[in-house]
Structures are given as structure tokens and as C-alpha cells.
Length: 267
Image (cartoon, rainbow, N blue to C red; front, side, top):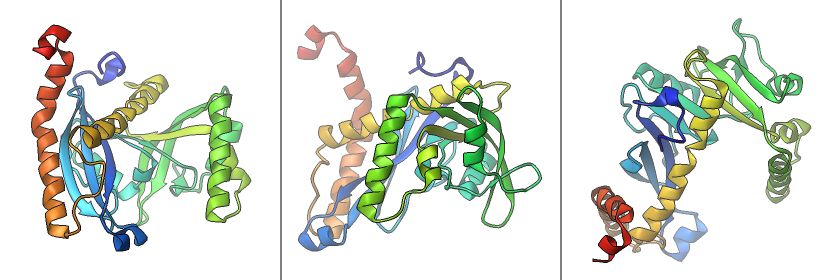
């Protein structure tokens, strides 16, 4: 991990926040899209899960659910662009790097005036933005952050526009011009200072978020969480919790085995 992380982050815990789910068993559960949701933290450079919380579909994903370690850098995707919860992470001594979306927040300038985010993207020179931004919280307070945006390569941008069109067609809504324009960009908000972390550093940090997706795949394949557990909610919950405990206990051993020479691993 250290080779991929920017030098400015060395010595700091990088904590990736995300969730995965396991479908509940049974036809009724399937009709209701019922599921077990696993809220998780994946730590770098340790490269392992450090926290799990199990809920059902009624509990959404929140950025501050998992306790903050002072000095950590918390990475999360666009589902976690939650101003009030970002504020709680910052108050607890953490920093954040969170993916944004143009309609995902009430964007403000230093005077509290509304910021047209897509307008900023249109005016961006050299396909990049790195500037202060403020986000309005629910109570009306504003949170001072930093906006980092970079235009995607044409191939990636074209795919993002195709996905936006497919989503609009599938869900039956009219796609706006602004949404298509914003699809060309990676939009990130962060609390990290530009004096310590360059634009490239912020992008490099966010790219590390993919590690948790790989970890989820390993979690479901190694400990057998691919299919739904039993019908009874109590036994299903116990089943999942036991398997999550298993991964917390076994991950260090699995890592050591994977790093062993072939002859030793086969012994």
C-alpha cells in the first residue's frame, strides 16, 4: 500500500469506509429486497478489516458510524457525502476524502452564496479544479472543505455517460444536461490541506478506495458469505456475526500464508 499512497500520508491510518450486503433467505425476503447490511472499515497499510457492524436494510450507510481514530484519513464513495456526519468525523480528529456528486450537497462559497458546481466544471482550465468549497449542513451551518475535481479520460467519460443514460431509462426519469456534463468528472471533497496534500495526492488517496472492494470479494469467497443464510433472523444474524469474527481472527494468518514462498505454503 505504501507505494501507492502519497508520501504526505505516511504514518497516518488510512481507513476505507463502505458496506456490503447479504440477501436474506426466502421468497418473501426476496420480494421485499430484504438484506443483511455489513458496515465495514478496512485499514491501510495493514490491509485488513478492523470493524464490522451488522444491521438489516433499514439502517443506511453513514460516514460516522464507525469510531474515529484521531489522525486517520477516512476514504468513502459518493454515498457518504453527508455534511453533518463529515463534521462529526472532523470534530473527532479525523480527515476525510469523499467522492462527491453535483447534486449531492448544497454547495456554497465563503459568503454563503449558492455555488453552481456544474458551472465551475464548465469553466475549469486544463480539466482540473482545486479550490475551497463550503457545504451547508442540515441546521444551516456551513462546513469548510476543499473541492478537487478532475476530468475523466474520454473513454471513461463516455462509459459514465452511457451508464447515466441506462440508469435514467431503467428508472424512468429524464436525464438532465448537467448530469451528463458532471458524468465527465471525478468530484472529491476533502479536509486535507493543499499545503500538505497536492491535487495528485488527493486523487492517489481516493484511488486506494478500491482496496475494500477487493477485500469484500475475498470476505465472501473465503468465509462463505456468498449465499443467504438461514430463514430464521436470529440464527442468520448469529451465522453472519460468527463468520465476520472469523475473518477478523484469520486475516493476519491468511496474509502470512499468501506471502509465504510456494514450498512453505504447500508444507
